[in-house]
Length: 492
View 1 (tube, rainbow, N blue to C red):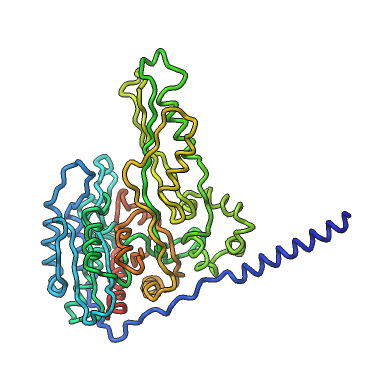
View 2 (view 1 turned 90 degrees about the vertical axis):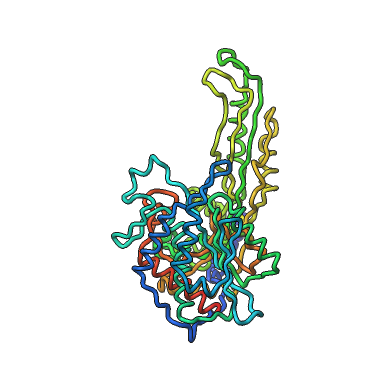
């Protein structure tokens, strides 16, 4: 009997080993369409140093977004709009401008062939505030727009005035050269991306939808070429093909209020604490399949260690190992699951008062495989049995975006742009874990992508919404060239 069992085990292991080896050998990127060429397109004639100075000027307009209920300062937006008109006259002469909800800018550069679906290029005009306590840690004044040491410094240099100015530099240079696009180019520059985009991008998307616009693709910020990718150790150009949804759960606990010297067995605070822990620890599916992560690993296959390639190709066998390895890294885990983050608490007004109500807010970033309805249902199930607990969304959630194609001609065009930016970097699809204006344009574009044609280091990325935000002059040059490629190769 033992020999029979041992023989069966050997045969089984051999079969499993053969299956693993075969699946690993077949684990390859899906072939992409060939990128469009820009044959006959005019050369971009852009003075990069002058462009850097103009980016610095744009940064000096303190176009700061504020939360609902706080006073909105429209003056910097108005001044910036007037300056853009004088800084980019050829573009303004070629494209029709519309002002949406007083601040956002929608431009249409009409193409000669109305049968071609337009290209939609996105950026945003607003920036996040600079916290007063952090100003001492900036090496240049946050809104100085200083150009020094090969960088343009200041809030918004990367997020997102770098893209805004690079798009306009490329478009203005092309218009000045006499370039006439065959395919219509639409430029949508929102003014409130940092606080939801409802009055900017959402409103402009509705205008386009009401006009029956169906763009070939939309391109926004969100990802870029990363100088050092954690899986390969080298540069990788990541094109975002989806972004996670955003939802905040409000959890409320009620109990008898009173004096802290005579507490009940449970209070609103203890009930809330248990609810927070249960929701934070509730099981949420974590896997490579069902999202952009598996496509990213496929695209990077030749650069990956054999062990990781084998594990990804055989998730049916190695999923516990993958989940353990990626789950221990917050950045990796965010790519393969919906994340749960308790962020805000509200309780009693004084240390010796037992509050009758305590509240918590838990932020979810929804993976494309999950919906807000399914997550809410799980959260409600998780707190079942805890008395006097209510669980509801703070506001209507933003669902995860649809996943755009990696086999389309438009993805191939953007891959060509990425290879211009970083010729030696492999191109791979990615998942954007934050939020961008692009989420509103799914209904007016065949595919929506998120990529800025720049090479960012970890230090560059740390400055976004942080201190010492900066964009290198070299990256500004790459971005101008990259956006120019999209306009000429895609619409020329």
